Image 1 (tube, helix red, strand yellow):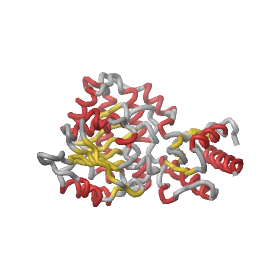
Image 2 (cartoon, helix red, strand yellow):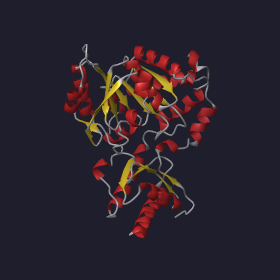
Image 3 (cartoon, rainbow, N blue to C red):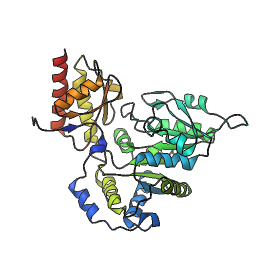
Image 4 (cartoon, rainbow, N blue to C red):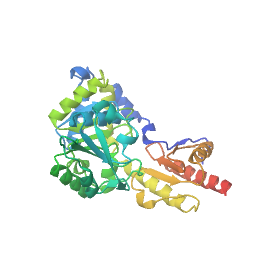
Length: 346
């Protein structure tokens, strides 16, 4: 075992571009994306839209910007957005819906991050002289805070039925939507077809250094481009970054299965340790939540001494995320570190 190996499980956003991706970036043909004449950005947007089964797409610097552009483009001030109570757009986008779009949010409880359609239905508000109307339902697939859990195609159909009954649009926060498609063994477009818009990240498991893509109908994307400019997301020679995204979509999707396998193996090994809490029913993709005795911050600090980096995700919970830069040696080192710390504490 390499004692100097650093195993970075803080997030799949820490991945480094492979040499072939860097080569594609260096050779990219570029223009000015704000003026619409960067050929590589245009190619990426066309590829992304086709992959997601949507009419059009816009390349953005981050998933947070893509989500906020979507909310702003779907809604009017004072309307209601429905979202799962631990959704990324509520937890990790610093009040964006309220500040940028001036909308209200109503939260929906869930099991493993998956909402019950009846719970959504019960929280829909009808616009009257007294009440704001619900106009947008946001779905997160996979679900970060639930541990990378997957919303099925059939549940997406149920959400579509509720939205249609109440005249709502659906935005899919698909930051890790390719992880969901790999887990279910279906084409990603099957998971996106019931959503009006979808935003997915290139900079997580797909290994790009930066960027997300927001996809949807042409008129919606044109509104979103205005919001991108308004939010300071207009990029110039962005083709260098778009080239990485094209490489991601063409070469980095299938290997996500390796991340899932290693996550499952780690979960099964740590489950054997009675002092660690693992819910194997929630281990579906590349994220693992571990309940630890005592302070998660202290466990994180102790793991760092072993060369393992991870994030506290609550007072007694750690989050570990597998990605392309963590191989089987890193997996083994992580298991040894947890067992070593647990033994020293008990």
